[in-house]
Image 1 (cartoon, rainbow, N blue to C red):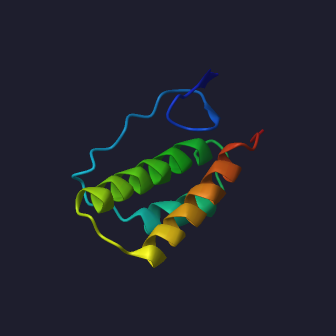
Image 2 (spheres, rainbow, N blue to C red; image 1 turned 135 degrees about the vertical axis):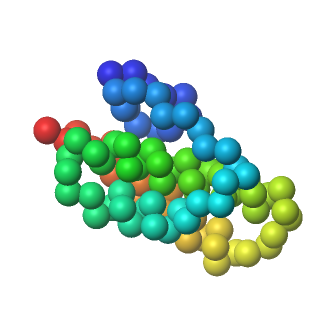
Length: 90
C-alpha cells in the first residue's frame, strides 16, 4: 500500500484530485462514504468525498464567500472521513 501525500490515510492506489471548477455535491459523496457497507469500496468513497470537500473549499476561497456554517460542516465531514479512512477494512 502507498501513502498518498494528499490524504492522511493509506490507500492502495492514487486518487486524482478533482478540478475545483466541477460543482460537486460533497454532502452526497460524504454520506455515500459514511454509509458504504462494501469494505472494498470504502477507501474510494472516502477519497471522492475528500476531493469534493477540497474542491468546494477551493471554490469558496476563490469566490471569497464567508459561509461559516458551510465551513464548519465541511470541517466536521473531513474529520469523520479521515477517521473512517484510518480504519483497516478486512
